[in-house]
Image (cartoon, rainbow, N blue to C red; front, side, top):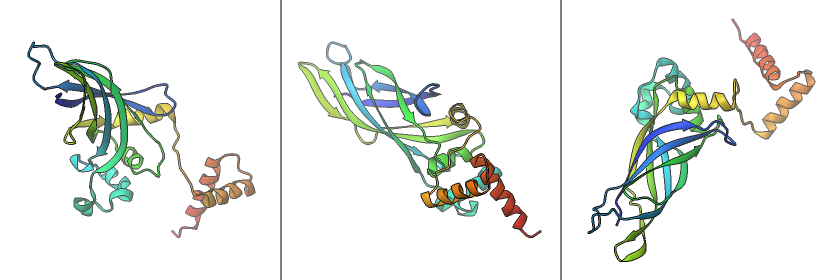
Length: 222
């Protein structure tokens, strides 16, 4: 029976996908003993599923990052209780036939929706890396001595850590959304903003928000 291990070797932003997409380079190794004839057993395919978590406690934060992360984790004095692992996303890939080792690309679609905790976290960071944990599961289809096809499940303890460079994520979002950020509003709030834009004869959404911010600043007592 195959004993698979996993290593995340690198990551690259895909330039011309439908939406922001990271390809993680994933090395899959069969560490089980070779067959009696000395030839590694053949793995026909691996239907691989992966849960990716963010482990925010595994890095340090600048004062600016701490301020921007207040929305997620509260005051830094409480981070010992609030800095918990977060689910980022799920991904899947089918590895083609191989013996011994294989490297596949694990595609991970990304969102720029600031209502999503992972987007808030990634955007708040200035540099360094994002600590990730990949948790693997899935099905192995393989050939063994005297049997053409067998099926086995990937044990639940298979995992791999990886540090995603912050600049890789930021450069990807800049490539897809240059000088832009996405904000998802409740429909009633959008309708009010839309009516304000019409009433003030403002040409763009940016102009409407900038005017509101300016009016708010003027009302703040000095």
